[in-house]
Image (cartoon, rainbow, N blue to C red; front, side, top):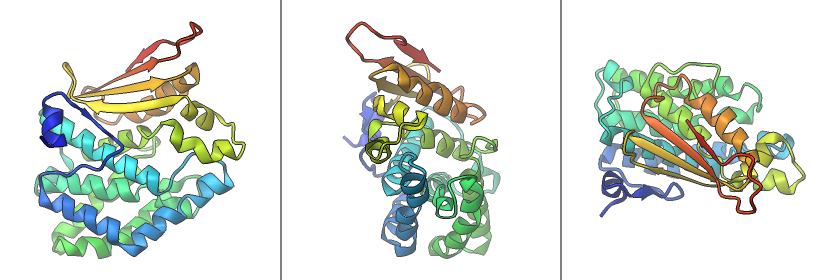
Length: 270
């Protein structure tokens, strides 16, 4: 049984693994992104400003792999739950282009970090636009390219909480960005002495799992080992979920697994 079929039967996605999707178009896009030298150069270079210079959490290739995978898992679970997406549909694009838009946006959303950590979504737009002009020609004619490019750039822009997504494709990328929160993400800044709230709270998150829910298309379960993880859930993830368009489709449950009886927070539900 495939991971996609397993999710429909109630199995849990393993967010650390890549997943193959039934449509050949998004799989071809994923292969292209993985093999493109310029894209891969950006994914490595974009980590210098946030991690090396500002001691912030990881925003490099590993972050992108996790965000893209979780975005596509979210998309797959939402589709299985009957959620209708509007980004590609509004442009009379194929249904297969929904996942393509998500894959491109999740991959390129943070490349603006090569310019600066601060306000990076706005720097990501022109850099991603140049890449998309080249990459999308592999799959689309001019008219389709312009439409897909616009939707990808919209999703990139709206991963920033200051902007409100107008499509569910953008909402998926926005929420998936906040779902990369486990302690491994803050390992480098923590080892280098970083003790900001983002680093410390990330250290408290043990696991994040995605599965099909009973009352919601998506159930996100988060295990944390102390109350510092509340910041990741209640401040960062909640902020991304708000105005994403997915509030009614995703249930988030965070549990404190600490066993010494000193649990300030035991459970959070969004």
